[in-house]
Length: 195
Image (cartoon, rainbow, N blue to C red):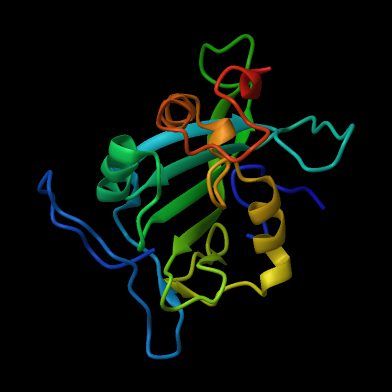
């Protein structure tokens, strides 16, 4: 099974005001499902990956793009101290790629939506502090989702994340911040993680 490297692909919350200083904590239904934020594309864009996979040697003829967004107040906190504050929320939007369209003659561009996923740090709600969610894909993107079982994503993220449970090693501008602030896990460095 193909896995996204930004979050795990087993394929967030309310409405945020448009103000620069607004924050958006994760919101949950009474059944403890995370509510998908409708405006995540207005959040801070962190990175995109193309065709990334956990499976060694696997290459996809039609690789997907993984676009990562983080809630703005969490981003600002990370810039300040290289750590993710409680209530940090990421959204991963997975899109298919295309190479033939309009005037394009080479390379890939993003096309249809494949899935929308989220990662949330909530220390009082989750024993492992972080949890992972999938809202589904095209035509069936749900407004809320239950957290995956711990083994589905948490184990890999806690073992391989460069900062806490996050794959900052794939977020070039934030990798530099974590390196400068000394918050990278042992074994990672700002320069070595780029090779």
